[in-house]
Length: 164
Image (cartoon, rainbow, N blue to C red; front, side, top):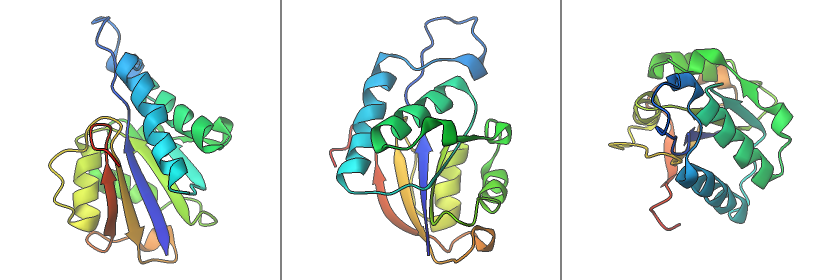
């Protein structure tokens, strides 16, 4: 059994319009939502063994904040550039390559792919994963490479404006 955490990056800043999308930082709300959502996971006793993130600044910063709150070494974050522009099928392929020693993993990515992925894997019926939203899926597989669409079970869907 594997547990997959799908995390959409926290709210990013549009204050500087000439900054490339890839380089957009978090805004003030993003910097407050990320530690709050990570604390919710910590309070539940969630254990995440692997963190894989888009290297886009807003995603990687979100991943770093989560690691710091959860007591995970931020230098262990695996950055994968393919996540940045990936759709759900590509994200599924990347998940299938996750380190087999991890029974739980967090993917930090972008919309609309993250919402599509949650719905493809678990038929979750989620319209939109908001910024800093977390979808927790239980996968009835022993190996990440056995992941198939439709087989996951939605355990939780949480986001900053939804009290836990």
